[in-house]
Length: 128
Image 1 (tube, rainbow, N blue to C red):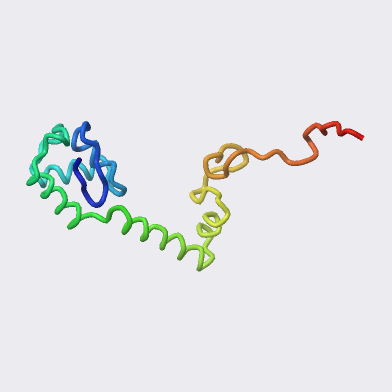
Image 2: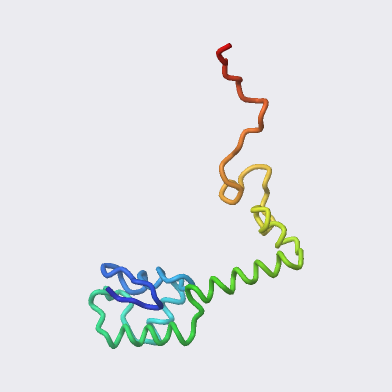
């Protein structure tokens, strides 16, 4: 079990895929890290030795914002937009898409499950 930046990366995966489990590292960043660390990208995590894991860890800590630090930065940016009452901040505050997408249809991921407005549903017969 290799642990990089506080994240346990899966043993059975190739190293470049396993690195993408760390928040803030995508496929491109993973390839750059492995090239600098001189580690073959298709090597399985379980086959890495301690020296290679150490080199990867050093590069991630030195060059990349990852995990909690990056999440704090992103949430701080969103909070700033809300505080200055920017349009994007208002969209974040009201859980709506903030990058110009339509909301008449679609946008279900951001807005949540569809809620039927009252008055259109059939009334349930009650005992009297």
